[in-house]
Amino acid sequence: MITKQRLRDGFRKFWFPIESDRWLTTLRVGLGFQAILYAWSLRTDWNYLFTDRGGVISPRVSEAILSAQTSWVPRLSWLVAAGQAVGFNEEKVLFFSWILLLVAGGGLIFGTFCRAAAITAWFIHLCAAKSGGLMSYGVDNFMTIGLFYLSLAPLPDQSSLDRQWRRKFAAASQDRQLLGFWRRVLQVHLCFIYFFGGLTKSLGNGWWDGTNLWRSLIRPPFNIVSPETLLAWKFFFPIGGILILLLETGYPFFIWPKRTRHVWLLSICGMHVAIGLTMGMYLFSLVMIILNVAAFAPQFVSVPWLRRARAAIA
Image 1 (tube, one colour):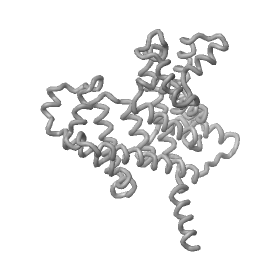
Image 2 (tube, rainbow, N blue to C red):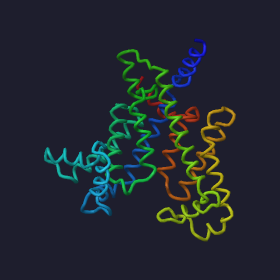
Image 3 (cartoon, rainbow, N blue to C red):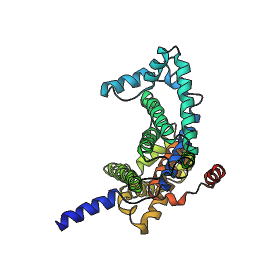
């Protein structure tokens, strides 16, 4: 009986710790900026990518491949079909969906209609990512993960405008154990991602001898560093490859202890900054940093302008 009780208490303590909502604020504001930057980066290519008349690869091809796997995953053709049913053409529907993603990102930043903004951003982004599946990469997967967790988390958080408006009518409270549960799920998910990513890399020789790191930096369109510079630093590739393996496989073992957490977190964030600067994968680097900081170090993030806005309307 004692052992069972200890197991129950340990399970409850791990999965339902008492948490503040600072991590949720970090995730909400960070993903709001991410959604806006993602939409803005595609402002001239949105219709080009998702129409048959202009796309490099027709979205019908991506959606046909997706349909062969499942018919239940959202895609932009659903929105286009719904729009055409009420008299809107394809271009107007796509433009409206792009505007919706921008508006949802703004709603997340300021904390207005948080739940609706999170679900809208998740749904529109998922539709775009799946319709452009052959053109998507890691940033789409991790944005989907982050927005999905945000949609389910106990919004609104204390720093949101929604919370301030709600207080004017009734006392608002949050389930701090539920906050702890969703933060823990995000933490464990990141541990699985990094560990198995590092384990997969370690199975071959490419990362141990630096070959895969070299190939990553010279492959278009990520080859923004000149070949001459890369050759001058060729001795770094085996070292860099091994460091990446150690950082990723060691993530679930060193991110939890307080003594090593900050060192590992800074190293992981530094790795993503390097990826952004050397490969031009700025949005991918940003979303990974947002997820890591929200999961393991939200206390490092201060948003004074949000506090001033909250005080102004209180």
